[in-house]
Amino acid sequence: MVDLQPDQLRALDAIATTGTFDAAAQHLGVTPSAISQRMRALETSVGQVLVRRGRPATLTAPGEVLVRHARHLALQHAEVLAELDLTSGSTPEITLVITGDALTTWALPVLAEASSWARLEILREDQDHSIDLLRDGTAVAAITSVPTAVPGCRSTPLGRMRYRPMASPAFVERWFPGGPTATALAVAPVLVFDRKDDLQDRYLGRRRGGPRHYVPASHEFLRAVGLGMGWGMLPDLQSHDAEVAGRLVGFDDAASLTVPQYWQQWRLHSPTLDRVAAAVREAAAAHLR
Image (cartoon, rainbow, N blue to C red):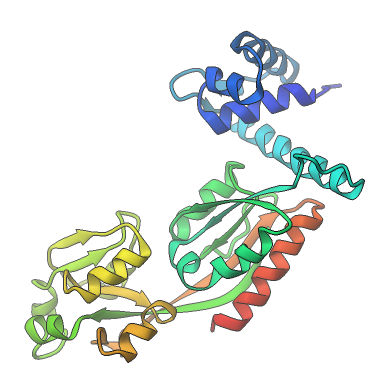
């Protein structure tokens, strides 16, 4: 029978978190030799390589499985201490991965509320790619556009965010005087969040787009559209005030895109995580379609 020792699992988690054996040792307050010994013992116990030694150190597939288990145990340990009123330094820690647009528009206020009962680490990742951090155990929950649950997780629909192609009035007057024709779109500058962002390409379809500018921050992306750097797909929740004020216009509302939002979380008994999930669902019901 394999006996997984808590100190060995903590060492593996620390390596995954920090990226090196030396940093993991500093994180846990032990020597690098102790980290190496614990990892050798754990790998011997399970009979598999768990960490690829390098800079940074990376996990193998079995290592990712054990890191998820280690983080499950750490969360449950903190919650047991909280239930026993032994919480000094042991407030449950929740790592969430959230799309940038959700974080900017509706999710942050509810997470600010949740910070009163849990320590939160919020990771920003875009749309489909957010589940990678859930799959490898970095996060315990995610707001994502992917409906299919990651193995070991459950998925709950939250609602939909509508995106429209938008630009400043001066930009539309200059580049789309006859509307967003294929010819006009082929030369008009496009704003893209980052190289994972496919919303503009989904709008363009088979049409060719103009030169691209990359602005990888939600607030700055909105501002760049307003400043006329290019046109971009913006969620209604973010563009509403600027549109009402006349700083932005939607130039092809009939071609809007809706992006579904889902809450995915690990299947584990965690009152803290369940409480965060309930708060997120309530906020989504108030803001999403």
